[in-house]
Image (cartoon, rainbow, N blue to C red; front, side):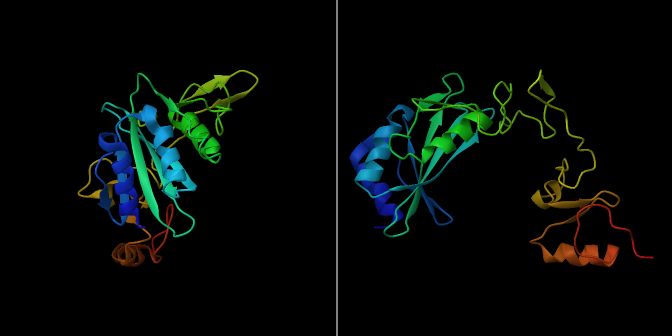
Length: 224
């Protein structure tokens, strides 16, 4: 059974709750229209379709849209390595959906990370607390309205954060630019604003001619 067949069986069971399967770059995805039914759908996927491995749960911040958050369940089978994805949306006002730890125990840390980084709650989770940031930290760092340099915060006698100086740094996104390569470089040489990305050999040649080396990061003294 391939991923498309798994998706079709899921739709046959739940009807209009499940979207038609979408395929993109070798990945098959279906969408669940009612996040409150996610446990039921996941249990069927595990017990009837053999999706006994929860690879990951990830989250997307659809900042500016409603529903704001999309939760993505990456499912797989052990017998024949088949992967497919189940998505569902959660609005910012409700900001909560049921935990799937009753289906896969391994969902525990995935859900805690989403709660910590994105602020989405998982109702019924056995131990829903922050996993990376400290208890009491007031922000959710993976939300799109959280600045790249961070926010200053202080929790007396526990921890604090300061804004990170980013001006001129090698991984700072450059506003504008003719294409994605120019806007989001992997390495930038501040003195020249030249770009280099590991996967683009044509840029390596330009940088090597200018600086004598085809790699960064950071300032490279020009050849004399």
